[in-house]
Image (cartoon, rainbow, N blue to C red; front, side):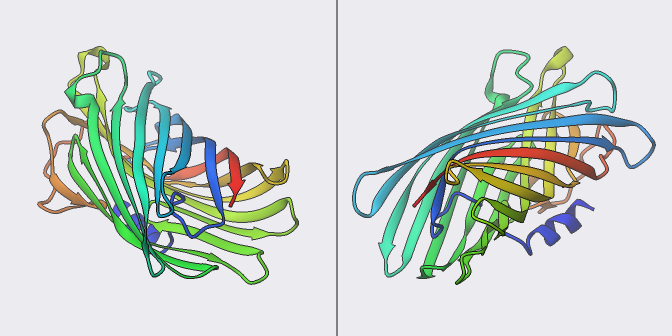
Length: 298
């Protein structure tokens, strides 16, 4: 089922690349869902909080340093019990954006992170390292193509994510799409200067070290959230609030430490997956959420 959703997600399209006519400095997101499992009626409340901060620092006419920080906290019952766990990720986002000329540019980012329940002191199993390379070809002031790759070392193995995307804005400035598949997509249609409707897609694959109750385990999260939203801009659209409702297909697989799959492309394990899963598979559900975005127009 997860493979189907990721193939579908690949037909859509990351918010950090250029070509666009704005830059999101700070973003706060909250999502809430009640997820069941595929075998019985047990379920658990799942809350997800994500905070992203980015800042660009131009150093030459063609080179810009990109710095940022991401915090994410997901709270849920991993075994569909009342005993809920916190899955916490803290990540630095450090890199450069380089203008290569003739409409070409590249964004290169190192992504070191700690991902854990943060119950015990942080150790080697809590740390993973990722990197992103994204190339962009700007054809017009309204149209940019993107392609690249994201790679990360995780507790289950190495995940490899090919990226493809587009940034586009219509001639009347009402319709826009900013997408880097399969990580992140925003589609927006402006009804008034302040009010707009749109759709949003966010996906991720990552692992969390679990140390609570002396567990020697990890969680593999495969997350896809697709939402429709209504957005309103305040302070000349510097502050944007978005109310969302959509479908959450996130799965949280629990495994013993050392039980790995090697390389994984999207959700496809190159050498197969013979791990023993310790909890039941999560089912999809409706979710609702709120985004608050602090944005600079370029």
